[in-house]
Image 1: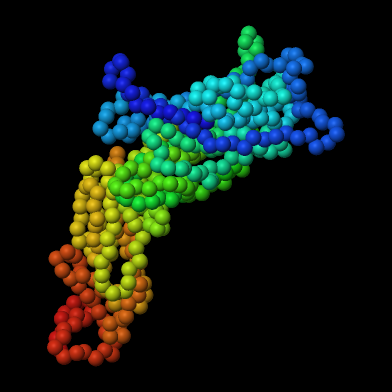
Image 2 (image 1 turned 30 degrees about the horizontal axis):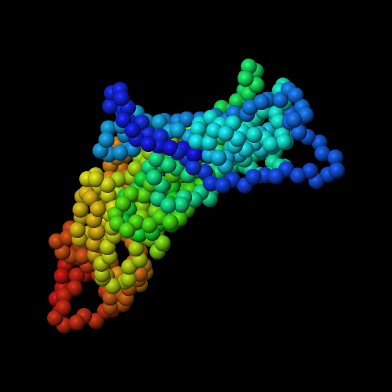
Length: 448
């Protein structure tokens, strides 16, 4: 299955239309074998089409079309008035067809590759008139699959190379369902498909590196992992659903030599995530994770969504030694979109805090004066359409050596941190001559 997206001017008004061509990989063809001496054929299916009459002359499969939701996000420097997504068939496509009573058979592409409407051929099989037929895509090569339990999964998606903005490879995850409608005048049987899922296009600003996976993450289990559907029930409902809080797209051959934009496509089931933070985690070949986010929506079936995070932060986690030191993290940003940086721990101080654009940020870490490890966060925040989005870096500092065998917590006492200083309570500690210490809640200083 293919789809193409080309941005071109329209003669009337300042309209720009965009088409997406979805290419799909090789799909294993199912070979039907009779393993018993006397084969019985499913009702509605005829063998040896040259010797029978009353069958349909042409089987036509029609792709559903959908508009780009939030089309203004397709580009930041061109006013997009309208856009559309055009899904088309590929020469290697096959579909499964069930009669209302009986088992499935597959039909392969006969003509119409590159078009939204194509003719399919059953080889030695035909569909007889007078029966009802139901079709699904992509074909699953299991003759014993039952029409009320066709499996579906969104786990295991892969993209090779950085996708072009006008082409998506959704492969075997573009699930569709249709009931055949006969045209007696032409002798054709038409299947107008409906899509079970929606297509996400994700554009993320990235730094140089090789990237291996992109994960979509939510804060609750709302992302469909797998389930089944009944081809005879056209309400497109999913049976036996299994949900999780993430879906991962594996990336192959995705390398950037300089700052750039990752373009990726992933198929997902509809879900409601209105005005909540939808997070993307991009992992590189060294295991570093860059986090970015968008404002969530109510994602509807059959729609293509353009997701374009403005800011990407990496790495998402840092391990610090117990002694004082510094670490750096990177921000990749598109345009001049504003953001802010803050820490939620007194022992983490942001030394430079840009407010827009791509940058490297340095954070100072105070010495940990107790043996237990501690955790703090550096937060890069932005507001999108009134919704606060926070990309969080988690910092875990190892335990240090307790000062004088006592207990306390270290922080900074300088102009960079308003609430700093040390507050130490010593137990049976010998004080050194010439030094001063701060004791208790009254913060009084005592010199020795």
